[in-house]
Length: 286
Image (cartoon, rainbow, N blue to C red):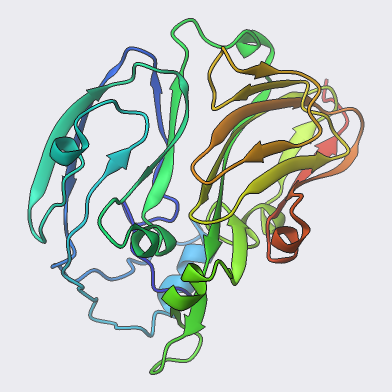
């Protein structure tokens, strides 16, 4: 269990998917002055969240940590000192931006120290699809969003089995875990099911906040890659796609035969720390 700061209650935050040219009207309320607890989900809806709710020993009455927060959409082209400004506890902000450039982008809290806010969990993905779409849209069989990030952990002094952010480790770029979609086993305990012959699209984002990702699927080749998700940046036949902190890409591969295919960060230390996810390929159904 990890003491996180979130957008919308999850790490990563919700995926926002829009189309080039769309106007996005965004409202955020800083609820850090309001006691927030883990609400028990409907029975059977999410075994992981159900277990988390039942074992919430941090504070059964909820917690509040008043502080400034903000929202920085890398997909927006605006005056940052206006739209991305810090919001005091209990206050709200509403602004709009136009999705002028297609791509796979990060959003994150931009209040200093930004490293702390991002490492605590305040980040997510924005997908801006090209106005006319990607050339392979009509033949893609399955598409998935994958967000890579790092966790810097230390045990809390008061409660066993509850971890908090280790800022010193983050400054030294020494992560405890490197994860896909917020959890070291998210795509292992819940593998992605595909079929032979499927064209699989990955919208992939490396949040960082410090590390580089070398995205690779063991047993497959990315036959089409749009770096940063922009049509002008097309690559073909890529074994590995290098993503710096905050870089994204649209990556596609075709499943050649039944079996297991593993998405990894080919920076081997990162894979050892958890950056891996499993695709299970079954024969094509009739």
